[in-house]
Image (cartoon, rainbow, N blue to C red; front, side, top):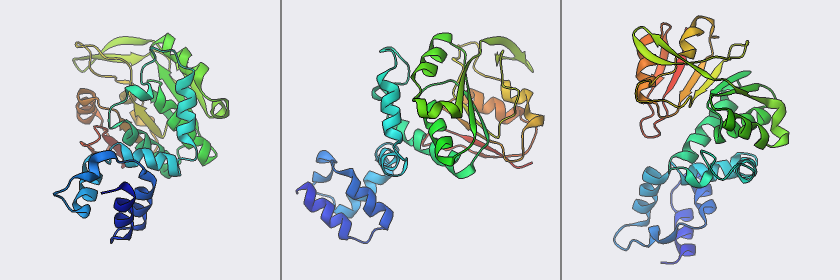
Length: 260
């Protein structure tokens, strides 16, 4: 069955306009749709259920991210060859993570973002602020080499929306749990945070920075954590204010939304 035929069948079937648009954008789905024993509807539903973490998210970034893939590629092109988080090194959920971050910043329109750990996500967050037309990102990195690399590689158009800060970590103990705390934090409190740093060790699996400013967080505070299960559990146990928690297991990217 040809790809053109499959796309025509999918486009003409009973699908939402958004799904039809995504199918038109896919272009190359390879042999996935050649499965002879399954209906086109089944293949389509299977694709969106099992592959939507990567491919539609990437398509949404391309179609609705206002050139964001171009910014990511420009960022990656000038980074050192051994840079962490290169686009070619990302797992199948990377684009889903990027699309979620971009979408949340565009929707929630935060004025101040704190990011722990700079990388591709720095570009995503800064580009979302750029598209919003306001806001500022403070990105803290505990490793001087990578903070400098990110700082030097950010496309010039985005630089007025972000600052990358080299912030070494200190070893601390919080309620009997060994962890890390950044030594340098911005003076201004965030209403959006992305926790993807610092690098952890087997002995120290949590960062406590947000706990120490919790009583100052604004009512619209929103936290996204990138695949840090121990740190997520730790925050869930020690945050004192009321939050709506969503595990987002499929994306391994839980969120805390402050209620009061």
